[in-house]
Image 1: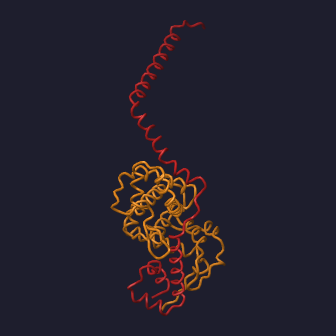
Image 2: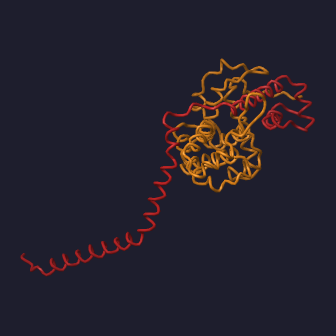
Image 3: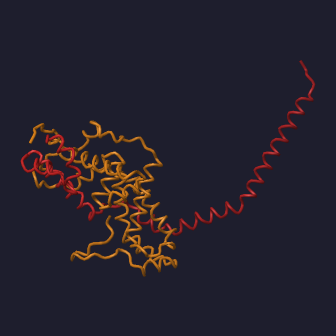
Length: 203
Length: 118
């Protein structure tokens, strides 16, 4: 998970200082503004990637910051603020899925209708070392079923391990592993549809 | 080892590698499966770059977030108000039901006492 900001020189630093957090705890509104300013883009981005649509992501982001504001006094600084913040964000976004129980694609697969919405892959080379267009990758992620998208985003974008994903999704580690596996496979099929036919050779 | 079997394990192999010698041996000899692995590697590379890429936030979101301390205190005072006045509200509700019941009964009795004119 993105826990620090890359400073550009290879070094990384915490996005929000402990001094800023202390000021915020004592009710300093300017400190709250600075915290929001430094983190809201990343939180919204995480929510959008997990939830797959802007309206839900906007609502989830507000819920996240409301929780942060209310629980800031209990943040002791044992862990990094950004780690704690992103944990709150992924929890909030994932439980939003459960609550709304929106009818979406089930994990059995991406159906043909949805696959047909994916832009043609002409601009993406399918050879080794092919460059992936990030905009298209974001679109493809949004097409994955909820559980698979959550798992792939947490594992492959934010670098959580399987145990952490199983805790976030409240599923077994085996189920989390299966979701990551299926999610990568679906994503590959969406991004490289012309290559998804399997050769049947034996070597 | 068949290509289908190798392709089944590639989504896991791409990140963590595989200790399975037969998979590695197959990949060394099969250009199609090697190309498939390269696609997964591109995909993983693309996903990794997303971590450092933020999307544009909707207009108005920043202001909504700035207003959270105020919104939170409004919610809290509303909640305290409801908790403090719960007894009054419940009592008032019971009284309202009792009054409505009494009025209904009185109306029913007055109708029942009226002589039949048919």
